[in-house]
Amino acid sequence: MSDDRLIVALDVPNVVQGLDLAARLGDAVSFYKIGLGMLTGGGFALANELKQEQGKRVFLDMKLFDIGATVEAAVRGIAQYDLDFLTVHGDPQVVRAAQEGKRGKSLKILAVTVLTSLDRADLDANLIKSGDIRDITLERAARALEAGADGVIASPQEAAMIRALPQAAGKLIVTPGVRPAGAAAGDQKRIATPAQAISDGANHIVVGRPIWQAADPAAAARTIVAELAGI
Ligand code: C5P
Image (cartoon, rainbow, N blue to C red; front, side, top):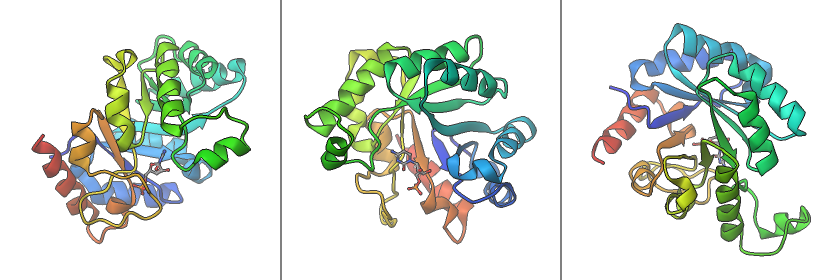
């Protein structure tokens, strides 16, 4: 049994390895994330194969950011592929352009607030206003949702405060940085377990290495699905 609250990040280098991993995961997983690292390795072809041929849901993690006309054109092109989620940076003008580009299609636009790899020193270096990074994240989430985003990407430790925003009613919260109890954190710093992330208001969790680097990826996925079944 799969559970589409679990999204598996297919962070392997190319379409051949992506298809091999999806075959090993089989019915244990129904939702995949394909990111920029896969783009030159056939990422769009893989997205189409998973969606059209295998009936999976697909999240394209492109984190688009450009002038409005270019974002709109890019999203219009991507929306033709009938995929499920697409990320853009959460600046209101980018979100509005993305919504314009997807007009009439079911693609959901998810806004990235502040990349979880950034800290206050990075924001200073990027000339982003002073203030607590959590406050900035929350404000960016609110503005992106007001601009029409269908949801936001957030660390699981931000999920509860974003869920409490009035602007978040009926919107999606998708959290990477999720680790089953006992799994290696890797380079993720602000982690939570799958059950905690969902209990805090996430609609979907994104899990990569704890599944695709496991000796038995399908078993690792099923363990997370079983954990979610209890919520
Ligand atoms: O392997 P792991 O579970 O850490 O993978 C998480 C996935 O989510 C990766 O594809 C990573 O690029 C993505 N991601 C993240 N943190 C963000 C946004 C995306 O880890 N803030």
